[in-house]
Amino acid sequence: MTVGLFGGSFNPPHEGHVLVADTALRKLGLDQLWWIVTPGNPLKDQNNLAPLAERIALSEKIAINPRIKVTAFEQALGQSYTARTLEIVRARNRDVRFVWIMGADNLMNFHRWQNWRRIVCMFPIAVIDRPGSTLAYLSSRMARTFGYARIDEDHAPALPFRRAPAWTFIHGPRSPLSSTALRSAKSG
Image (tube, rainbow, N blue to C red):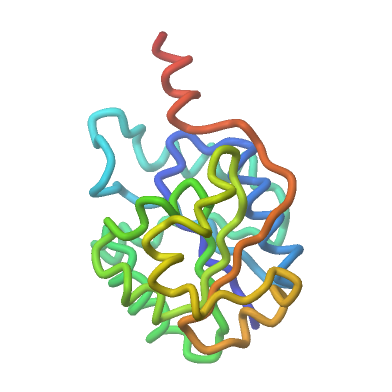
């Protein structure tokens, strides 16, 4: 089985997240995508974070594709760092081929994540295009450091079967929606 892991605070979830998930499912030929609603993000302001139960309910409401499984298992694990979560997921699911899914808007700051190099070496990564971030695959620290491991998006269906480090940048339809803008509009 091939599974995409799409983590985030989803504060709030929106159609741009759904577009990333659907694009990953389609372009990578995944069997499932686990939409992982995190309890928090150490790199973001926790004061504006909606309750986890609310973010899960909103995610379930918009992620209607039956191959998308909304989960918040990080809370049960007591984890907020992706590298550790991925180690646990791999240890508990030895027969599953995972791909870490991320929007290109996260690529520019990916090097600020705890143990980001370990994440790159743990699972293949699919970076899905987002508005204003198309060139991140050329200029980000991760892209420069692991440029040798990048595969052309024409070979994206093979990514789940590649040994990490391996990553691709997938172009496609982009949504201008962002959680930050939606929160600002709501409070403003």
